[in-house]
Figure 1 (spheres, rainbow, N blue to C red):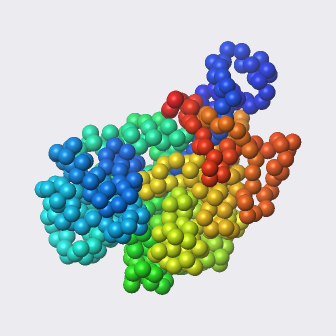
Figure 2: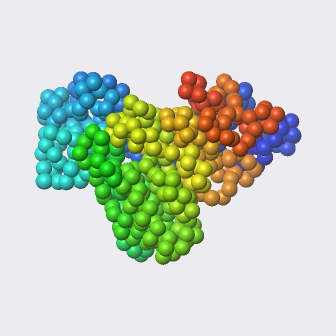
Figure 3: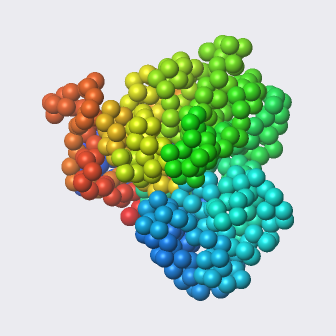
Length: 510
């Protein structure tokens, strides 16, 4: 492969390549595997960096482990707010999150904010709650329970507001460096007024780093002029991403038609179908991509109804031309899948969710019961209907590890929902570029004319495989010359990234 000025200019056999480019710098691969760079279409950069540089509670195996980690972190850093990410009480024998009193005892007098793994609820110490005026009257505040909805958003804003610019920049560098070290050349930041705020987003867009950032802002608008103004003022690329229609299943805030199996609630609704339709109409008329965070089946009902209203008014082609997208889209009926495919709606999905919470004994089954849980994340049905998939992480919710996401899509815990390795890899590369509005036909590939955005991997072997429960459209016979991929069986070793290059510039080198 020959690269000039950040573009692939030639691909072919070794001997002609050297003859055609006699003065080129030669990079010997010594048997390494070259592939298009990954794009993660759903990331929270600063939050990921804070987890990488701070208190990571994802490995806490019990309530005692969690509190011990808080105690040790607070002792090692005697000043400032204590921020933690990733606790998951469904993995603990205790079966409950930390209480305010336990946090007060673990870090006396300190402001403590610990976000649940799905980032849709949190626990906080008395010192932090006391710093938020009127918090006990906010929606989502219930004494003795994790903070949800508006109460959570207000406390999170107070906790993040206590960080210095230096702390935020250190977190951003850690996150983007980690992306590059995992073969990721671009990320889509899913920001919003109730997530990280406008100041964090502006700082991120000004932050110098080789990993490309496309910015989404989750705020609903009521007209095309308002949409254009908001995009211009914030410098964002689209008005979507984590524009919440509902919350998350783990926090009992995903909006369901029927109550949860383990709690008498149907979750939280942030936008109804009328607000969704108004926003989609405004963005479509303004020529701006949009999308929504949608997880529960009632939330999906509202989204589909909202889109349908706009399609009836503007026509399907006008809506499809914008490449609007849905984040997560975990609960969908076959009829909804067909409609969304016809309207050109892209699905930005996170296979790591199924890997972490799927299966008959996972969190999904606890929250929904086995029958409903088995319907979640129907990747194969979505792809078969023509919905363009983009595979991401929602980091820090799951790890920013694209091979792990591809592997999870291939090994979905529910038979019938799996997709092939080739389809999953394409969704993490070409599909993710497409989800970000890049439709030049070459982004995410390595052909002449494509951007030289690639990663070099140490992979012991390459194989051509099909999905375990579907019919492939290509031959697995080696003589067919179909490009191989590293084996993606659950026990196969993960490839190691040796180098990451974006548009000809090296971002990472092992």
